Every structure is written in C-alpha cells, then in structure tokens.
Image (cartoon, rainbow, N blue to C red; front, side, top):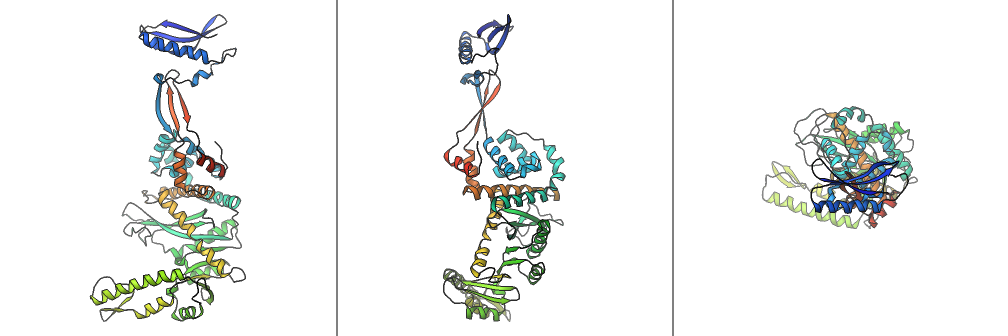
Length: 496
C-alpha cells in the first residue's frame, strides 16, 4: 500500500514523498517535491494523494504506473511542438518505395526536410532538430558526401523498380526534357558555365539538368551537364546510358522540338529507337509548308501525315489555336509597321527585315506564318500501323507532365538557385532533390492533392511537448487526425 511521507530537508523545506514498505524496508515510490510554505505543502499533498488514487496496485509494486502520465498545470511546462507525424510519414514512404535500403539516415532525413522546408544542408540539419527533435552531427555530413555520391545509380534503380511495380512502367515510353539551374555567383568553372538560361539568368553560371519521367510524370533517371551545353546534344547520351543499364529493347522517347536534329534522328534510328518529338514548322522548307497547307483540311481536329527526312511529320489543325495564332501574328505585324513608320532603331522585330539599312516588312515570313496558323506538328518514326496520328499527338501532349516535375523541383523543392561552389555538393544537392521529387510526385499521383496541400495538412498534426517537473519526463500529445489526412494516408496505404 502506498503512503504519503513528509520529511524535513536540510534547506528547512518539507519534502513530500509517496512510499511503500517491502520486507520491512521503506521504499520511495515517487518524490513529489519540496515545499517552503504551508500552501505549497498542501498542493504537494493533493498531488501525492492523486498519485496514490490513480495507482493500479500490482504486487510487487511496479513503478511504471498510470501516475507517470498525470499532468498538473503548476508542475508542468509547455516546450513547444514537433512535426514528427510528417517525418514519420515521409520516412515510411521512403521505406515503402525502397529508398531506405540505402541505409544512410542523415541522407534520408535531408530528403525529408527538403520536402518540408528547403534550406542549405547545414541549416537543414538544424531544422531536423528544431522541427522533429532529430539530432545529427554536422561533421557526419562532411564525412559522408563522397560515399553518398556513389548512390546515384542505386537511387535511379530503386526509382525505376518502384515505377515498374507501382505504375506498371515497362520501359516502352519515356519523356525527356532539360532545364537550367543557376547559381548565386558570377564565377564560372568547367561545370558551372553561362549559357542559354530558362530562368532568365543569362549573366549567371548554370548547369543543365536532364530528366526522364514515366507517362505519369514519375522521375526515373537524371543527368547533369555543364551550363553551356546545347540541350539537343544531351538526349542521345542520356538515352543510351539508360538503355545499356536496363537492357531495353522496345523504346519510344518523347521530347520537345529543341531535341530534334538530323544527327539525333540518325542516332535514334541507328539504335533502333522510336521517337516522338515536336516539330518547329517555321523552320521547314517552303515546299513542305505548301504541302501541309494544301493537304491539311481546315476543319477542327483535322490531321495529316507526311514523309520527311526527319521521319513522319504528323500535323493537326485546331480552330482555337488558329484564332490565338492569328491574334498574335496581327499584333506583331502592327508593331512591325509602327517600327518601320517611325524609323525606329530599336531591336528588329519578328516581321521586319533590314534592306539598305532600313527596316521593311518581311512579306515572305508573313506568308509562311499565315499558312501555318492553327497548325502544330510532330515528328515520329512510328508507322501508322503501330501508332495512329491521334496516339502520337496524345503522347506528345503528355510531355507537360515532365514540366510539372520541373515545376515541383524549382518551386516546391527550391532546387535552384544553387549556393554550392564545389562539384561534389552540387551533385549531392541534385541527388537529394531527385529523391524528394520522387516522393513528392508519388504523393500527388496517389492522393490527388498537391505536395503543398499535403504539407499544409500534415502541419496541422503536431506533437505538443510538455515536461512534467515532478518526474522530469517529457510527455508528447499528438493532435487527432482529421478526415482529409486520414483519407490521404488510406490512399498511400499508410497507418498512424
């Protein structure tokens, strides 16, 4: 049986204890506290009696009792909150997707914090402790960089295997595109070079990031090139590397018009690869443009297929596109006429040309543009028996999914600007962002909600941290799951 015991201390206070007797020996079950006034002593007695009343008597006495979870406002302190729910959820997804097999705890936690709140690597280590109570030594990061860089191939393999198992990816169709990532510096080296910038940062050095995704937009491979590399020169090396790695046979690559060139077409055909790429119709010879104009019906949805040196040219007509193209053309022609009339020395406009140091209207270009209004083109070497015109157009339009992947990387994961100056941290930064992109894309595909929405809802589930000053133990109380998060977890096949 438990008893309240009050003793005098050397500091002339009165200590309140809960004790019991076992084999004629007095054993302190719980030290409640020390009181210096009658009021404090009365409060401690009430707490002590509460401990006794809430104790579940088991013989011999067990100190792991219900009393450990009792909280008294004047004997407790609120320490803040952790977002452990989010960390546990993402780590479970990393496990389910196979990434936990790389067994690099700090690397995986850096992926988690990259999704939650992107920051520098050292700041991320601080945020891991601040948000999740997870402590990593900074030195572990510096010591691990070299070993982590060798994981690129493993990470791509795990991502590809997951795409195959979860999204039925069978290597027959891949979407390819590149983007630029700039640096907050003006200093160049052999990797960080100035080039054509898709971020409008032409004065700052950059790297070129090539990405391959499935038809759902799930990332499976990537590569990095120096910033002055022409994007059309990246496709064949990346594709060949992927084919060799996975022993792929039947394969179709979908890419935008920037990837098309005679050399690329020859290499694709040489390697017996199928392709669907956008066509820049304005660059075609006038004879072919006339052929398109004469043979393609100007009915909404009309299609035509012509043989060219780049393979089959599939064109379709859209009345909505026609109106948009005509509006833009007329607006540019008006600007050109104004520039000519004012003898403006401003930069030459689209429908102007220089003649004897004077600007004139480019009638040939206007004629060509008029004939192509409302028409969009696609090159492919797939015969109509293998892929209809409609199928080729639909597959090309799925290319927007890789643009979504880049948008997630650039805005949500803040993959750029890059603040690293050495090659190893740059490669590691992209590796972490690639894994984070795979997790983020999987969440969006399965739940039907954006990554931002998932994070917002996850932040509503916090662990309140309260310390019991009597026991000096920290108690955590988690917010109840709300219906939307329960729905997301169910779709992700997770439970909490």
